[in-house]
Image (cartoon, rainbow, N blue to C red; front, side, top):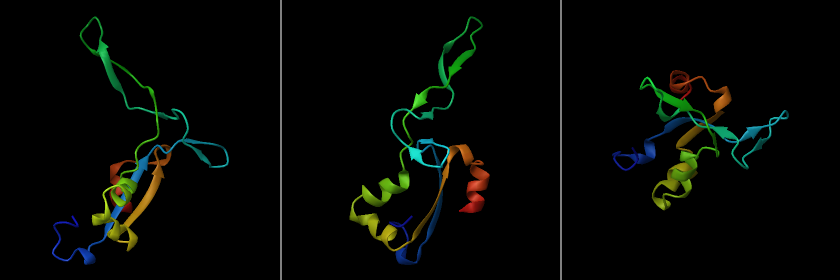
Length: 106
């Protein structure tokens, strides 16, 4: 959006990141070590009736796309992050309510 805007300095973006950031303990601290998250249902084969067999596996924390955009895309987009033109609400996946609520919050 910023690279296509006529006046990118007037553009503001709201994002709601609903990720697994790690294992949350009783005090609310997040531990991203190991494989604290779960994948979605993965198809692992077919049963004798030809239907998909699925499983859920352990997984590492999700990648923070906003952080990548602001730090790893070079200086081209970092300026918009530094100026506060990207507003982010982080919601742990266990507390997320889906895309409709994310659109409402953004």
